[in-house]
Image (tube, rainbow, N blue to C red; front, side, top):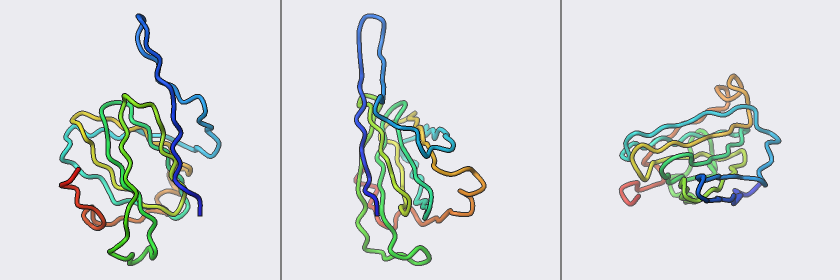
Length: 144
């Protein structure tokens, strides 16, 4: 199975302002996008998984902790799976590329944070490939 990848972008600052870019990001496979806004850093969103859908996460405002796990059984996954943890923020232009076959859980690290999510499937397909698990299943979110 494919690995989770990080594409590091660039941030340019001068007297006119800031440009955040991801010049090496290839949009091949992206079918749609949406924004997730967390007004409160106490909110935990997830776990939400997809067998066939790829995801790309980019922080537009604030910061987020994103946990990603590969379920070993989609109907009843093991409780001892260990997620990979990623921190992203508006101050570090990077995108997390998540291959199919993963579940993610998201928590804002700062209030009023916004995450841009690209998806590899159209909405009707995404609804048919949607797996949800309790947010506390693989993570102790009190540490984040």
